[in-house]
Picture 1 (cartoon, each protein chain N blue to C red):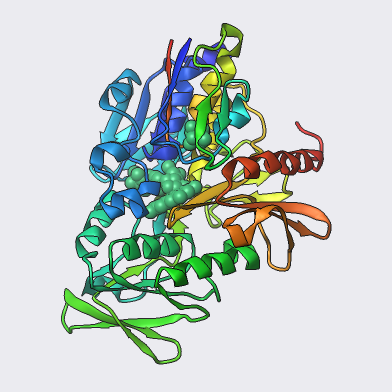
Picture 2: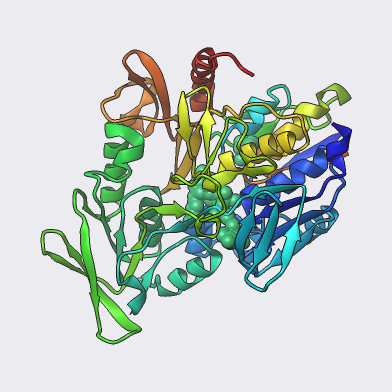
Length: 64
Length: 401
Ligand SMILES: Cc1cc2nc3c(=O)[nH]c(=O)nc-3n(C[C@H](O)[C@H](O)[C@H](O)COP(=O)(O)OP(=O)(O)OC[C@H]3O[C@@H](n4cnc5c(N)ncnc54)[C@H](O)[C@@H]3O)c2cc1C
Ligand code: SF4
């Protein structure tokens, strides 16, 4: 599973971190999301899909 | 659960909540017929930018689309756009539209959102706006030219955002409303006085603690608005006026359906309004077991999260919906975020950062109970505090199920 994050869209809501904190984090200075792991292992799939689904601006894309 | 996957689902309202419901259904394995009806002709778009990047002109139409066209076609759903639902038969789960179309389904999801309140007589004037749709935003944007005078009626979140954007565009702006300070009802005294300070520093004329009595303008239908009359009798001259005095749930089409309507479609803890009928997003008032009462949230993250909960329940795998309420607003580049709420009289205390530096987190307590987390320009540290609120809320849930 490969994921991409569009930081231009991100509004720093933090929903993705709440859903999958081993894959996403936020920058200290402005809260914009960062990817900790762009190719998470399959057992993380459910939480990564949840993170992508709850992001209010759809900044997270999953390329199977 | 399998038998739910092939059933027909009809979603009324194809915006944030409705579209997210449809997507969550498909992700959950739903392969039955899926129909979405929306009164607007535009493919689904996002509303938060309408008062921010879209209104300022920084973002174009493509950037506010909720999904690229490919993603919409992948959904394999029937989109009926430009038609208004006018009637729901709850027992038959059958919806009629203004064109006479009739759609029946096994499950109906109501996602019709809210519509803006207006001042009496406002429609008679040119230049007196509301802001909910992209068409509203386009009309308003056309009037926001440098040097003109904008009066914003309503100093809640929407009014405050429009004031900030309009100042950025070089208008002279007055922000009028019943709260003493902008967003006083949402942010508590500390947050609202910080917000007042940034608006003032940007040159906005703050007129708090006032109701608006009426609008005045050129006589005759379609005459230009020329000013706003306050309850004190004072007149604020205006070239453009935006009325942002709150909204009401779009439930007129449900009157007489038998559903209970009380500032929203009244639902149980799983967002069910009746057998086979759910409500989701801004229009839904549901029993929040963690807060001990019904609530209705008008915010973007709730639209998506509630949609996921509703889709699960439609597919026979639901549970009570218990979110930690959250909203954000961006004004003058400051990200203001709130988990929970700050009721009047709550005690607030800064726990991180410092208001003097323009970055802080404040906790709000009501009788020693944590009720809200306010973040000012410090999103990550704010989210970290959310957990406390979530735990406390979970602890107060009676017994689930
Ligand atoms: C300008 C603006 C700025 C905002 N900024 C923020 C922000 O910064 N942060 C935040 O958290 N939230 C913000 N919000 C709120 C957020 O956009 C809403 O919570 C969200 O749009 C709710 O989604 P919804 O699908 O429930 O309702 P809506 O988006 O209102 O969608 C309802 C849909 O139903 C359709 N409809 C209504 N009646 C009928 C009918 N009878 N038949 C068919 N279709 C019908 C409408 O056409 C509409 O498309 C903002 C809202 C606005 C307007
Ligand atoms: S959920 Fe989306 S908007 Fe929120 S922090 Fe993550 S990427 Fe950014």
